[in-house]
Image 1 (tube, each protein chain N blue to C red):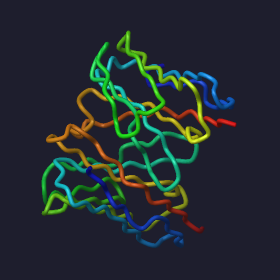
Image 2 (spheres, rainbow over the protein chains, first blue to last red; image 1 turned 90 degrees about the horizontal axis):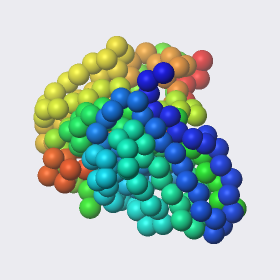
Image 3 (cartoon, rainbow over the protein chains, first blue to last red; image 1 turned 30 degrees about the vertical axis):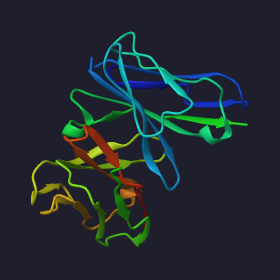
Length: 115
Length: 111
C-alpha cells in the first residue's frame, strides 16, 4: 500500500545504546523530515532532506544522525541514546518544501523510551 | 528564532459547542496550516492557507490567515466526540525555508 511507514512503533533501549528508527515512503516525495513530539513543545524538527544525499539540520539535531541514500528511505540514528531523547518520533514527507504549504504526510510515529 | 504561540493549550467542552483556537507570532509567514492528530497517529492536514486575509472552510472547520500574516485561527462548529485530538498550527516562511509548529491544543469533547 502507498504511504509512509515507520518502524518500530515502540522501542525501549538503554542509555548509551545506538538506536535506528526507520522511515519508508512510497510516493517518491523529494522532501522528508524527522520530528520529535514532546509535551509542551509540540513538534520540533530534528533533520530534513530535500533529496537523496542532501540532508540538513533542523531545530534540535544534537545527538542524532540521518542519511538518505535512497529517495524512499530516511533512517534516523541515535548514536548514544540519552534519557532526554525519550519521545515520540514522527517521520514526514512532502513533494515540495514544507514551508511552501505542500501538505506534510506523517507516519504513525515511533514511541522511544530510553532507560 | 521564529516561534508560534498556540492557545489555548487544552480545552474540555460539551458536545455541540463551538471551539476556537489561535496561533500568533512575532514573525511573518507565507502559509498557515492546521493539522489534527488523533491518539496514536501522526498529524493530518485539515486546512492550508496561502494568502493574508484568506478564510477557508472544510466542513465544520473554518480557518483564517490573519491580515498581518502573523496569526491564524481555527474554529470548529457544533463539536462532536470524534473532534477529540491535538490540533497544531504551523507557519511556513519562504525566507527561512522553515515550517514551524505550534505547541498544540488538546481538545476533549464530553458527549
